Image (cartoon, rainbow, N blue to C red; front, side, top):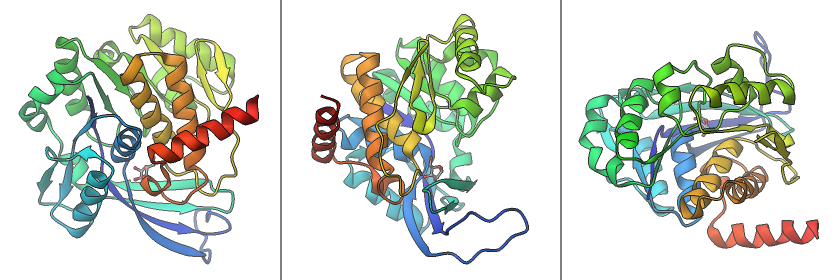
Length: 303
Ligand code: RIB
């Protein structure tokens, strides 16, 4: 069983030919509301691909919370431990341009009410899981507490340090698998990571400090792991929102099943490649049948 400790957001998404620069107003083309949040997205992707997923997090007492919990449940995520609180459900204002690129402002709301007391109430689940994964859209001290419980019970911990933030020494020691993008890696390392060599050097430095596995996501260029770039599967991108989350969900589902890193990376990349072709976050993620069909179409192209 995988525990995802993380955020649940309502994504309020506008599309426009170009994302406005500071001080600029542009006329948009469309508006839609999607179920999102990095944690919820990763959980939904893993569950749709067949993993048993239990979610830890919070939503507000509002209709957005009702809507997203319903969607997560429909995808097979166990949301019975998600708590309601007296603030609004997390909200993300997202702009997507004609190339499918996005920029996002997150207002955390209920996500930032997740604390160590809440984690303690769910210690039993953490002690029973195979793997726990978290991101940076819920408070870091609560994640650290959850990872401590997981490590004491000899469970695997995976951190996707998004949005970018520094990591404490403790957090580095508690993390088995770190999956940053190049900006997040640079923030953790405290130096530029603008070439494959610099990223590899930083990944090795973090491994020396205690993280077993560092996988750097490179967007459409693929993934860097163990000094090797695994190229992404090309796709016509409509909306890249949650492509990273799809990678993580696919990776986690496969890794929890058989612990093979290369295969898990490929699963993640197939899920990400699928998702960029559709609008929204959770709305763009494949069901298992769609995933299998897409996987075979990609593998056939490679033959
Ligand atoms: O990673 C994409 C997600 O980031 C969106 O769904 C949005 O909610 C923000 O959390």
